[in-house]
Length: 468
Image (cartoon, rainbow, N blue to C red; front, top):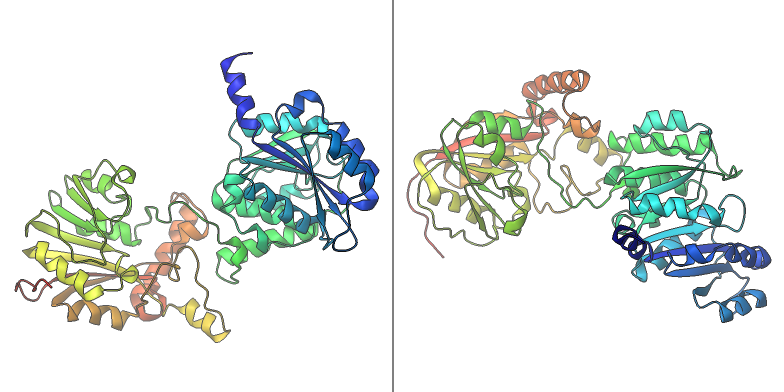
């Protein structure tokens, strides 16, 4: 056996296979477990049977207890609540996460989940897929339409036979999904929102009669409505490792900051995240010094210098009053001590330097409508990012900057991030046309339609702020 095969087997050996059924299914469960051959057992860390019973304290059927007594790989657990299809999977996934497995697969003791097909699914998982679906050969049953709605290429939405990465599961709120058959479609969408790698393996699996193409399509359309902020559902808020990406449309705050900075300048980027602006500014001959709380190893190499600092504390870095621009792009809403942060800016800005500062507009039209219908929900990004500690209107944002002894010399506004809403690369002509039209509307009535405000300001006084 080659070293690469050994490595593959070691990874797969952190997989748990969970069989689910009721007490009446005990004979079928015993037969299904017996179909897991020796070669496949070598690739599993554990076989688990989750069996539904009628009442608290009731033991699993005798034949399952006898099987567990002679099968060192097998564990038995009871389900007294008699959950449905999705509920059983929630329990199985929670068990896998709680016991530190790397992959989990849930099987029913029927021909929809032939154990003999598991090897091919694990091979795809070993190759890097975070979701592997056993797809029926040559069938989609509405999958083509659902794929078009979601922009996916999933081979078979009807199949509940899947291998899942536990690392991906930890980052999606699968507990908020349906306890019914819609669970599987909801999970695919959550993993799509996460950006998880998916694969389909053609297998000899049977049609699941409980699958509803109409129900799956309804779930897909509901997700699209959530993306458009027509509805907001907590189940679609997944845990991205990185919340911030460079927005490429001309009307975005990032592009307008890049446009505002003169070639050859020296820039201090406060709250620079991973250093998104450094590389495009370097193309203009601009040097960027970054400040953020993240570890130095996680920031862009395009930064000229980087200082790891907490912006809630008075800023002390080994730099003088040398910067042509200080950038605070979507930072001030994250900071409790905002006056202290803005006072720090003046200590490092040249006498003729400029502050470029942006923040979202809480008074934009769709949040006004949301309040009218009683909805005000925080999420992982956007205006109501769950890490925001202060929200601004146009007037309160301008007042915050002016109260810190700055004089506003220019105001810019941004359009809604349509490339994010439509998950576009920014190259779509239709998306860019929509964003440009909306940007014109935002300039006409910024209080109502601007997604963000970007202020360019100069110091109203050069008096050195007192250190506390």
